[in-house]
Image 1 (tube, helix red, strand yellow):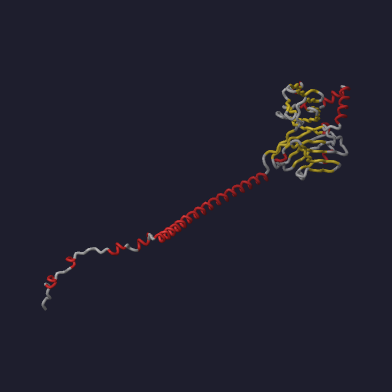
Image 2: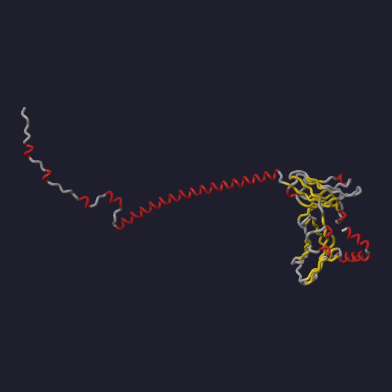
Length: 334
């Protein structure tokens, strides 16, 4: 960015063109894009416009890419690093620090403007539950009316975390009571922000500004901080333990319900079998009565007619006793 400004100052014609371009773009929407420089980082300049016509993108008035039908020309500094999506989005990967600056893209009959800011954040690691200091310093020359703004980058939007303006602090509601900055430190150029009891949700990229004017010159040093919250807080661990206990209790209850239900169904099935057996016996007896066939119990208790009339034959000669044998036994004399 600074190199581009030096080129403008050294070239009056380019300076005039930039003024005319700025006058023309005052009514145009300029999309501000913030990217973090990492080894595998990339950035997407979104057009979201379907067109089969010519597409051309420039970076600080230098060619990035120009496509016509099935042929594309790529600028020297972007070879093997740019590609076009179906909706005319321009993807730059891997990202380089010199890629920051002003982009103009023409897609069909529409034009899009971008201001790309590339950050090299300072990394701050802190265990969960501990306090963290996000450094930021600026040469404010003991300003009588200091200004401080800390923002958190969440995907494609920025969340205001802390702001000091006109002698008053304002905070993100979810972080109020856990973030603070020293008003006395502003007079010495210390714009650092403190976070107490860091949570895993605090992880992310933070931006620091010491001026209401949003420009690269209004950012502190470092201009961004990447906060890594390591591990879990004690409350999170306790919450996880409670969740595990609740799940285990639910599983036990389900097992008990299944076992009791299975036993009840087994008993009910057995009682139904006994009841069906008794009912089948009753139905069999009724059927036998209707058809005149005696039941098994009747046959067992009452003998048949043939059995009742049967008398075994006895030899009469065996039943009679001869009188001669009886009379031969005379009484003994006294």
